[in-house]
Length: 279
Ligand SMILES: Nc1ncnc2c1ncn2[C@@H]1O[C@H](COP(=O)(O)OP(=O)(O)OP(=O)(O)O)[C@@H](O)[C@H]1O
Ligand SMILES: [Mg+2]
Image (cartoon, rainbow, N blue to C red; front, side, top):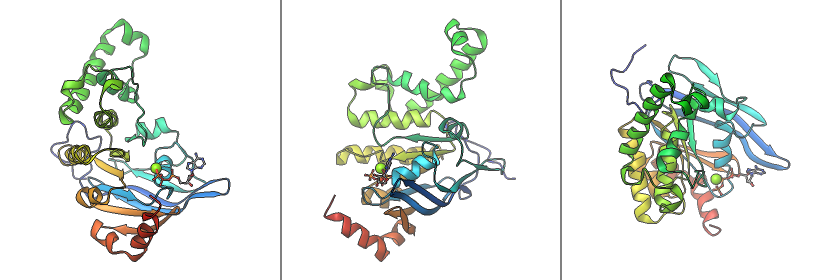
């Protein structure tokens, strides 16, 4: 197997770009009478930005929730390819196990601890890698201390990459919305993921904030080489930054391909024109 000479410290995978990383097949999810996902299939390659688009209620967040273990699908499977060439079935695993296998995520609504600082929130993002118990960490014993230093180094790397230096000691609740969304991205990145799942990281932002966030996502992709699955409504952003797009409508995949391909797909155009009046 080929190995890369250099791997960015924030990238949890050493897989060369363009290899199959995640496979979703035949995924179905029902809530009572509601079919949120119907036989959804999708493949994500390493080192790519893969967008998931679709009208409100199409099943985008549900798909991310099934991948990250928050929802248990009614049928089908999600498989992650690891660096060592193994296939790991994620479908029946709880969220913490999925996270430990290298899949990190951000949420559609900000899920940070408002009263804690940026630094503290990011250190909490490292919890999946913490081996020492809380007591030894509090007593500042040798191994816990060494570990703390490593965690701090990773977090500082994230703060540098996302240019959050000025905010590191500020309680998250006091920061502007756009910065809080960046901290959310940072908390997920601090897990050194092999795959980053971002649920509408630009939701509720003005044009300038969106442009900033798009730039940071591109930096994570280009500088750190992290593979990204991104849910986004803004078609300009999707066209600009994604390598591949999967389109959902009423829980079904109605298009898949490069941004240019899906924009020419009549089913996609129809779904968007149909939703245009509502959203
Ligand atoms: N926990 C849940 N319980 C019941 N129904 C749910 C649940 N989560 C999602 N759904 C339903 O599944 C469908 C898909 O919802 P989902 O949130 O995945 O859509 P979405 O594409 O992310 O929409 P949006 O663009 O508004 O975020 C909707 O009909 C929704 O009401
Ligand atoms: Mg959603």
